[in-house]
Image (cartoon, rainbow, N blue to C red; front, side, top):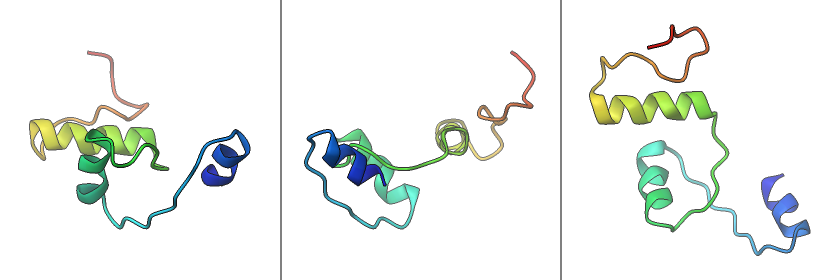
Length: 67
């Protein structure tokens, strides 16, 4: 669906199947991939755990108390 919408807006697209975040996250950072359908809160928690360790408190949960 994302590809069709982008194509309709005049963008060139290519669909790649990437199986896990460990593969597509570096590709996003270095510009090889521009768009990945992902839940923002889930990805935020994954990035937070990557940066601060597996026991880092979740940052993407709406139930999280404010800092």
